[in-house]
Length: 208
Image (tube, rainbow, N blue to C red; front, side, top):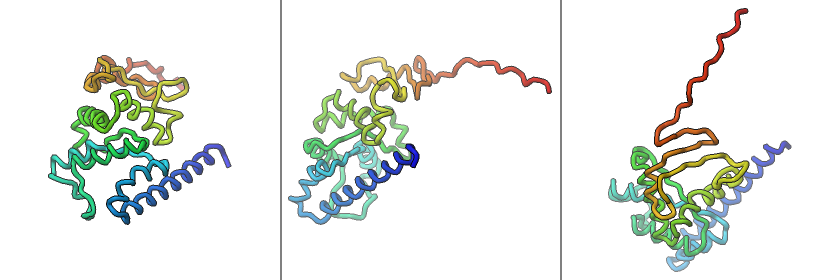
C-alpha cells in the first residue's frame, strides 16, 4: 500500500471512529433526562470530539425568518440565547472548539461582518480575543486534520497569510482592513486591491 493511500485509509478510519463517537453522544443526549443531557458537553470532551458551532449562521436565520425550522423535533429550543448558552457549556467542558461560518444562500453578503461577529461571539463564551484567533486558525486546522499544512506560519506549511491594518488581538474590526493576502504563497491582494501580475510575454511558436 502506497504512503498516500495508507494515509487516506487511516484518515477514513479515523473519521469513522469519530462519527461513531458522535452518534453515540447524540444517542445519549436524545434518550437522557434533562439532568443527564446537561452532561453532554463533558461526554463530547471525553469522546475527543470537537465543535465548530457556527453561531452567526443561526443568528442570521433567527433574525431573518424568526426561527430555525430545519428540524421537526420539539425536544429542544434553538434561538440566539440557547446556542450561545450551549457553546458556553462546551467551552466550560474544555471541548476543542474551532471557528467556521457555514454561510449559505445570500449570507456571504454579510462578510466580513459575519466573521467578526463569530469571533466576538467566542469572547462571549469564555475566550479571550487572542484565544479566539487561535481557535480560528491553529485549532480549526487541527480539527480538519490539516494542522501539518495550515493554521500557523511555519516553514513547510501553505503560505495562506493576510496582512491587516490594525491589531486584531485588540480589535476584531481590523479584519475589515485587509491590505495584503497570500493564498498558497501567491500574492492575491495588494494594497486592498485584487492583484494581477504584470503580463509576461510568451515567444511565438517556432516555424516548423
